[in-house]
Amino acid sequence: MEDLTKTRRAIVVAFRLTPAEAAHLDAAASALKTPRGRADYCRAAALYIARKRVPPPAKPVAFPPRRKATYDVQRLTQILQQVGQISSRLVETATPPTQDAVNAMLSQTLEIRNAIASVLSTGKSSEVTK
Image 1 (cartoon, rainbow, N blue to C red):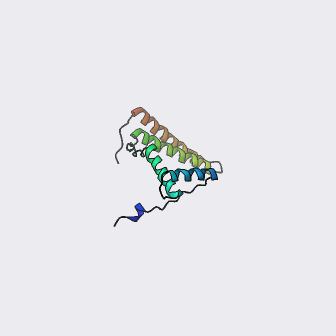
Image 2 (image 1 turned 180 degrees about the vertical axis):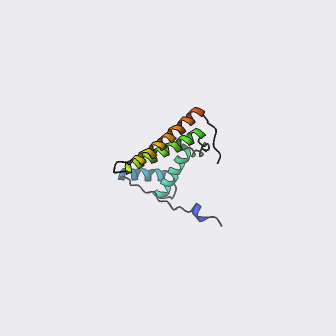
Image 3 (image 1 turned 90 degrees about the vertical axis):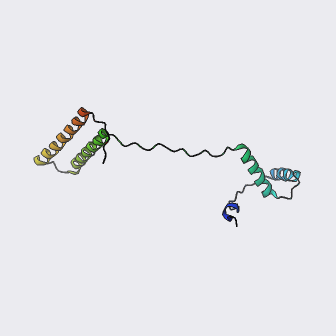
């Protein structure tokens, strides 16, 4: 027994016609000398034209796999995250920071500066495997 979901017509396409268009459609259907109604004639004509003029759909294209970021890009990303954390801490402080907080932020900033300098001076571009 065949699958009825593939052969059963379940999608409805409806459109309106002017009286002149309906008369033209009836004349074209009667010229074929078939006992079909307007709907059957329109379906057959539309499918005939669609099969003749519309090319088949294109095959999907597979994109290449995404490359893993190089070591220097990963390291700079981590450094920028740290800079963002420091700046958000500065924004959160509504009162002027104490000298200890300033010293802590200064030491973090120096660590970031040294990390950026080391990445830029080594020029490592090998990928990190974790």
